[in-house]
Length: 300
Length: 318
Image (cartoon, rainbow over all chains, first blue to last red; front, side):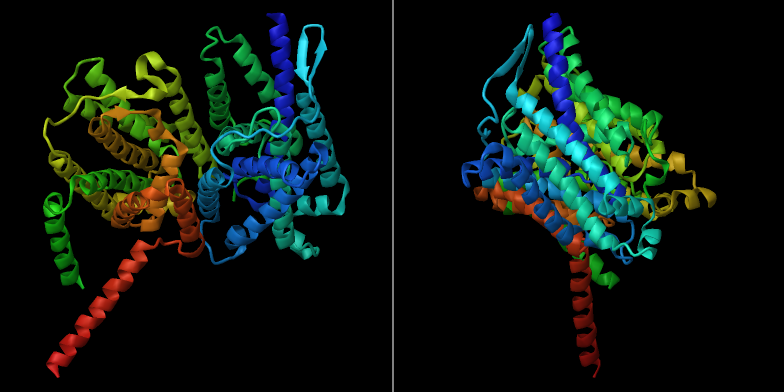
């Protein structure tokens, strides 16, 4: 029993790191564009498929394939932003938040269903990064999970470096604090919107490519992470990257422990998702800015 | 112009009354589903388009209405019409409660909260197999013992007219003004004396009770109720119907729902492409025609006909 709990905890941390990648993408998009991207889970799904086809069709080895998938997802997201989201920046549109909700919701329906046609309804599984399991005493964990967690941590580190130490990152932060002031000091905010949406998409896509060998790819795989990412982002506070990472680890851990500890094992897996959603509803009720929320990134 | 509307209304009424005699059983079924979807789309349009409350949990209330009716009729042995009534009341109560719980939220927060509520409800229905029959669904007794769907058609027609007519009365009254004031600016509405709390809850309760009504009709009509009614793809279809019709027009939402439902059936042989098409239609409408496709199209058509009539009258006078 103790071993089982240990394994679940380890799995929870791995999933938590991947949740963190997806959710930081969502929070970056939110803090710059001021919209909640309801299609984020579907972009994560597309990233997984991009990775799969880069490996199987182009013959790229699995490790660089993650980076290639991220690059493709970046371009894909920028294309979506240019095609669908530009009305958000025009002064002619009223009720921009509503527009953002509906257009990304429509996009999620569209992507989920076109994926069924393009990639087929059946689960696909790319080759493993490294075959086999790591066994330390009672703790068994597959190398794929370790690779996914390691890759996720590297990407998160790179992201934090990018956001805090580079000119682009600081420009993004400036736009998130005040669009007007940012344009006064010469930051091209349109370019920042493109960068933020592309970056957010690339992070989700990277998570999709990393997770693919663990769980298989399927067109509906974005539905659950989509809601999970909302849970995390709201727990961590919309707009806060470090809060998001902490919340992601907490959620991954608590969900897997919840499965392990629920007295009725047949219901565990299916209530695990409801558990996260329930926590999110509670947080929304009690503290709508989240636990680590930044005040200035409230909705307009 | 007014005379034109009345004439068109009359033609529509005659067409609606005679419809079952004009088509075969298959298209009658499509029309019944279309009219049921019209209640869902119009009530969502009332909530989202008029009151500005973007709920993605509308299908949860369809499920509450349907499952309450089904469970009361099967497990509790209540007569089906009573069960359906209970379903509507249950949806109204739950809708009011959800409206009350998310009073502090707006915009995307509300959308996420209601989406989460809907997903939690769907997961509970799927998991609690002993009560709800799980993903396999629950068998519901028939409402009418007739050879054809005629009674269902006239029932849903009556329900559609009563519910949409009722909503149009609400929208035309002071309440409709309050809803729109809340949508535009909650603080300003409150400052102007609108009881924001009360009317947000009322908007939720009205819209949810009608969603529950659609669900309570759906369960005995189809005969089997599955948790899929509360899925996000179904929600997407209802949103597409309301948006294509024009979110700030209740007749537009009704027309949008029926048009989309007929398109769905006409495209049945294209299988999976249908939902892609509706996703694309939703994106296109939002991106390029935010007032919907049907309402502006209808206004333009009416303008042309009016213009033509005026020219004819002038020529006759000359």
